[in-house]
Image (cartoon, rainbow, N blue to C red; front, side, top):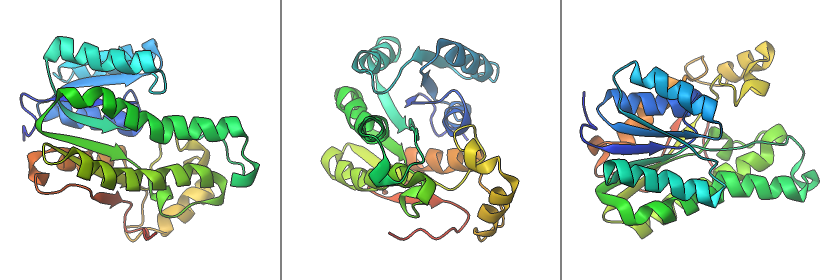
Length: 249
């Protein structure tokens, strides 16, 4: 399928894990993909991998909480491609496993800045360049529904993204659709402190109806669907991709 032929997609935090798989999926389906990460080395390595598969890639260093780098991401995209069709906001941080009331103020600020505020500010910068029929996909988490004690504040920020999706879908309609993907537990470097523990990993898999953890490709497939015209009558919705793990607020 080439659902994204002729389209331009920005994917933040896209040099490894779920973000990389999303960029790869969109690129294999025809998109010109703009990838970003905080480190030049990571951006360069990811770009090489994607180009080796015939994907058109623009690689930009961008820390999403840095206003200049965020603006540069948008401006470089416009300079090269002249438009933006898809934005996938994937960047996240989880710097603490403290209980919420024991979390330092600086950590609370970082969680808000990266996990929630950066999405808003990125879309403020990008909005004037989004095409009619464009799509935004925000990456939340199953932790936004089921808040594990060891990552409760992270989960709170991911719950906030569910509300942000609804609000932005209304605000950005009818020209731009806004949807959300809430991944279950996926063995990536970001989730390594959970999924590297074999006992915990097995327990998490047993909580799913499908008896396994998710893959980055599972998340990319759901994201590509929501970003594509196959989902042209879907906006303001969240798809939970968690193998049947309970997901009620």
